[in-house]
Image (tube, rainbow, N blue to C red; front, side, top):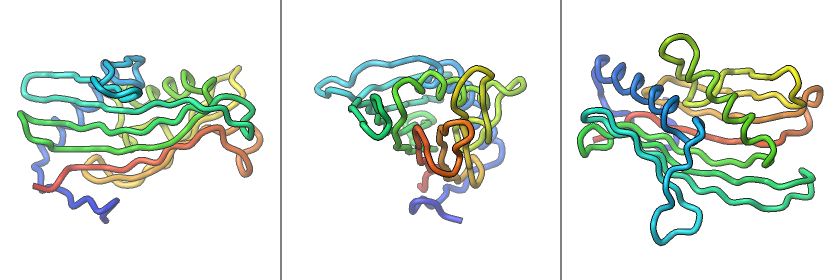
Length: 184
C-alpha cells in the first residue's frame, strides 16, 4: 500500500522500533503539539522550526501558521501545514507531511487531543502521528476524531474537530496527513 507516492525504505525491525520510540518521545517533549513554538526560520514570516536531538537522532518539525477570519466558522481560522522529519546522522529516514485548518479557539484542545496518544501508557502510541480515534472533554463543546491507516512504516489519515451532536454536517477543523520511511 503506497501513500502519496512514498516508496517505503527497507528498514530493520530494530531500527523501526528505535525511530518510532524517538518520534513519540520528541512529540511528548519538544513538538508544537507539546506547546513549543520553535524558532522562526530567518527570512520567512510564518515558518517555524523545532529541533530535538538525542545521540545520533534528530527530530525536525517545520510548520507554517496563518490566521484568517472565517465567516462560516464565525471566528478566526488557523491554517497549519508542515513536515516532521526524523534523521539518523545526516540521513533523512522518516517523514510526515500534514495540512489543515482549525478554529483558533480549538487549538489548545487539538494539542491535548493529540497528546492523548503520545502519553498513552509508558511510551505512547502511534496512530498516524496524531491523537486517539476519539477524544473529548467533559465541559468542551467539541470532540476530536482521528482516522489513521497503515503503520509507522507507511501511513495516511485525517483528523477533525466536530461539534458534539452534529457529526454529519459540520466540522471546526480538519487535517490530512501521510508519511513513513523514505526511499534511499
